[in-house]
Image 1 (cartoon, rainbow, N blue to C red):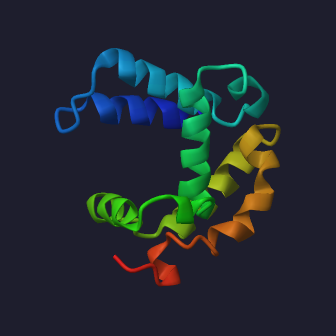
Image 2: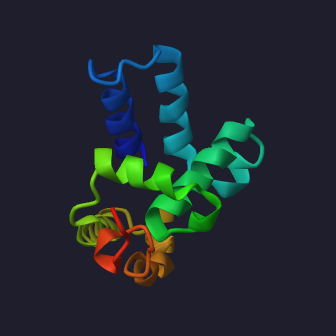
Length: 126
């Protein structure tokens, strides 16, 4: 979680995105804690929002509650090339490197990756 948080923080501070540093710090904290559901419930509402976004991105949860043109615009800007394969590799590495992590305990989500309606390989129109 912390590695992903660091990458997101760096990405948002990049010249292309240029987010306010305090917002970048908030995103960093949210990503670092996104698998701590009990903790998220005690935090500001944006933590729950990020968690919901994570579930949407990873397994397509609540996809039909998001405008399709919004999803298409995001996918057009940030293509999901090899998303399922990359996530499976990441899950495998995380469970090997950190067997007691939240990611290792979420192994149940792996089959759901292939069924994500947002993934272009499932025929989602771009």
